[in-house]
Image (cartoon, rainbow, N blue to C red):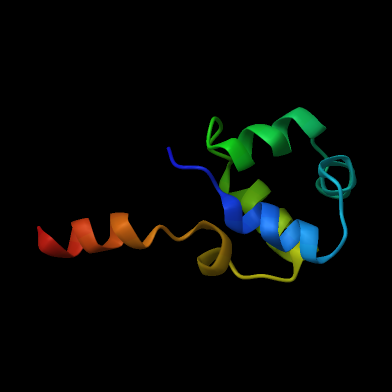
Amino acid sequence: MPKNLRIKSARAALDLSQKDLACAVGVTRQTINAIEKGDYNPTINLCIRICRILGKTLDELFWDESEHAYMEEK
């Protein structure tokens, strides 16, 4: 799973720490760190909560263009 730099960037743009985002969505700072590093695949409900706090859509934060291109080739 690739790193999710889009979450990190959106979080930083709002001047939120990992701990701030974690508290806002109801998880630990370690969970946010693992998502950003690509070590943890969050549930759709957690993805939605993250999007709401960061003011982004699911596509903006979680859509992987390379995976989409691969699926279209099949």
